[in-house]
Image (cartoon, rainbow, N blue to C red; front, side):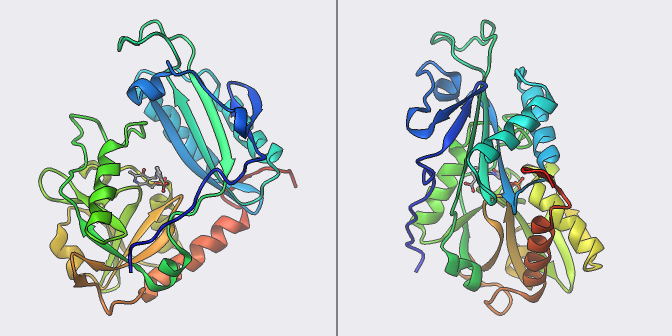
Length: 308
Ligand code: PXG
């Protein structure tokens, strides 16, 4: 059932990719083999979406990008304002209204050594395309997840709040999940506390209260996560608790769901072969999905691509 395949990304073959201030046709959009993004995963990135001609939470994504860059001593060659305009322009030139935007900043290209001191110019790449993360049916039925052996990196190794180009542990976690016949992997920290899934944050509902692991346990502070917390409180009047949780809490939850820009909001109905709640997407999850989409499509939390 979970042996799914997806042909995704790169659909926008006629598209234009922003590379260091120029728009290049997708088939010619190439960077140096010496780029440190490739050699060392030395860079940071963001995955952003536009809904109905408006880039959702663009400022929040850029704030996180600049914060990640600062943490890794990476100088982004564009000002915040210039970056904002570059993202909007990339969506515009590709004539998209609903898109997935991948913004990548690497430390640039300079020789083969690890020392970054001579890297003066970073590489900025912005791709606007479509993304499909899970088959549509998973949004109706919910998905199967397993906890994986690969731990989320501890903050004293690589702080998970840095959205760096080093996704190997997340990829290994996803591989483990797929080998186990599950769609997604849940990652723990070294103490065994639940952190998040491979590319999405995790929430659970118990007795009408919404719970999510504290990001200080080792998770990316997701922008979808923050939006869900805000909407759950404001629109649904729910109590939201951020704390320390183990697998026990997930197994015994009434509902579990994942949040992320790419995945949006999706139910988890089985974890490590334990059925969650009644084995169907829960009521609160469905309400949150609905209000999230209304909010994203309304443009109130976005930056307009095409003006009014
Ligand atoms: N945790 C991690 C580790 C992530 O990489 C999220 C949570 C969700 O954050 P936002 O801000 O998007 O709500 C992410 C998101 C993908 C993909 O293809 C997604 C992400 C990174 C790489 C790929 O689904 N990041």
